[in-house]
Length: 553
Ligand SMILES: O=P(O)(O)OC[C@H]1O[C@H](O)[C@H](O)[C@@H](O)[C@@H]1O
Figure 1 (cartoon, rainbow, N blue to C red):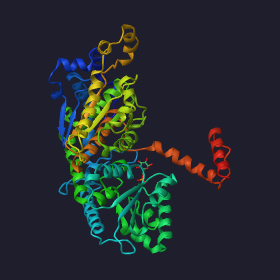
Figure 2: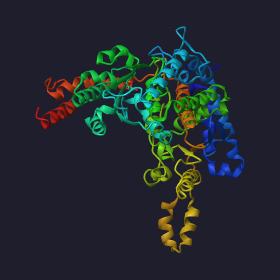
Figure 3: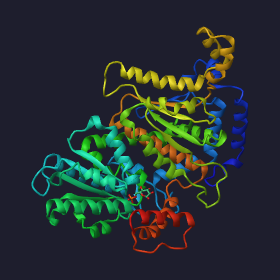
Figure 4: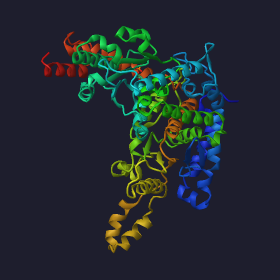
């Protein structure tokens, strides 16, 4: 009987998978490929413009079946329905997590408290569309009558990482000529460097904060506003140049932004799932609304696949269960995401928040300690650069690091043979990870180079690559609004499925609060508004004193 609260490690399905793991120890992937010439066809899924080759995994038919049986016994079907239908799956904040409603077509509906949220979503999309064309057609202009040329988006976390990723990834689709700058960090360098690049007459500031309480965002917005008023000498001009996207309209108004200049957010959208909402305005303002809608359509196509495809042919489910497999049965601990596409360079940063903030949890949704490892460390960077840096550890280090390789079949920048070269690099990495190089192969290579037996004895052990390292290869024809939307939605659902198996709440983030609370106590001690408090630990105390002395306080 499926359950959403059972300890997954106590199920027979978990024990079966442990047995499969033990049996597989003597059967490396290389052997699995040799035994089954159809392996690549069998472990391949296509959905929403994406293709997943997951044949280079420590996997056979029994294990795939076993992983799906585990998903079923953990109540994945029920939990997925609860998510998609708008149940209050975020129990600690008593909210639904309805990012999927943000990309539903207008003729769909999802009710929250009796209200159809899809209608609200489309009303906001239409308002965004009017705004974007108003800016592009110069019906909306700055205080001196000049057209806007730059946007400064001020926000952090989910109000930053998604829009930045998409703006960068879809650079070839830019239409409006508007430059978008992102300011996130409370490090003053971020806002100062940005303000040096823009002209107050032609710059629109977009304050992006679901809560409108985030310190970094509010402090950076105050600096931007002060700079703007100093530059143009007219406080009234702020109204034309500052807008907000928030669920806290009252706080935005208190900041001095007119209600009419506020785009809505809803409490049923988590910050890290919000790029599809008006938080995506930097995207829409640069690539145009038609492309923004295409991004939503791509995500919706993935949502439909996630909702309907059988579990073992379901892209997010298969990727999530493979991640559980390595994380919990092989103690992998980390997971690398390596896009072979410069435009996707911010994907690892984005996925760090999505996955690690969602699944970095130590208690179940019922408040009991979890019985197995939860979210792995997510990391990565673009290929081929990483091959000349950290891939060494993937190939010959002692840790098991599953990798997602992501690569488009076609490039936006055909030059010389670069794209084939890039593709060759990507394939060579997954092949090297899977096949490795045996001692015999290493010895025979050295012999071919004419080395003496003693030299071969000395060098060969260093040249052995163990292989049997798992990877997925995710392919799309090209990075487009549609395929990017599908890719991001895929990872959102993958994150959810893992949380569902572990029985945790993937939609809260209480762990980030303690630092904020402590920071509030420390700040006045650093600025001299308060004396250094004797009650803090000696390390913090000492470091506060160092800061004060360096800054003559
Ligand atoms: O959009 P905001 O309310 O300003 O929140 C910005 C970010 O800050 C918080 O501390 C959370 O860790 C993030 O999940 C959130 O996205």
